Image (cartoon, rainbow, N blue to C red):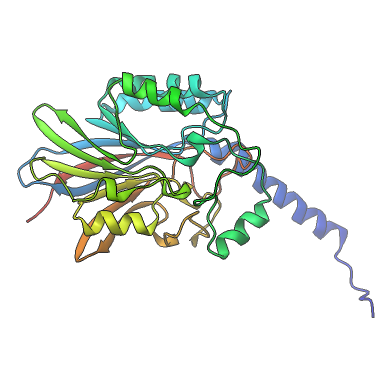
Length: 313
């Protein structure tokens, strides 16, 4: 028997209007409401002067995003001791010049970087409903599969060459060093676990004993990489990739992390334990979005200034 009940036209129109307003806010305002997060992490040897690290992540630059470019340029005014870029700079194969223009002032500082899947391959249009369902089933993007047919090759080599020319240290499955006024910082990085380019066996062995500080850097915070870094004794792991959940529920938080990390640690500072060791973990919510889902809700775009302070032994 067909129900005679009908939703009043006014209610339907109201729901539609609220939805449209929410979408307009998420795309037109919040996705462009850039913020700076500040956190302190006690990981330095006792007596050492604090260090300030600027983490930028998930820029996902699309040609024409002038406000994002200008905001990234202003971050140089923070005068960090060094910069860490945790990947996914691109969401447009034509946007390399704009990424380099945006990061130009920061390239004057010492820095290090890893790449994410969107540095290597352009994004593709997907059904958002299917995206959420795949996350619920524990499937995460490419995650080891070859790029789908039609995936665009991004000119990541141009980014690499420009970063290297500026003196930034590339950390794709390798180790590197930064020297800051007599301070030795050892860095260990992985290529993107989201597409299974990580090769931890090539960098295993733990922190360098002769460095003043050792950091671990990776784009996507998959548990296998966090476990490996923590078990080897790294005091701090820096990652991005999650977009902080991107579409969050106020007073509740993120629904997904786009990897197997729990939603409670989708962004910000937390800890990770493995092999009897505890590491600090900082996950940046990033400052961009996939070009096909240019919205953020209850999760403003961000960069983070981490102040590293002496630990209490």
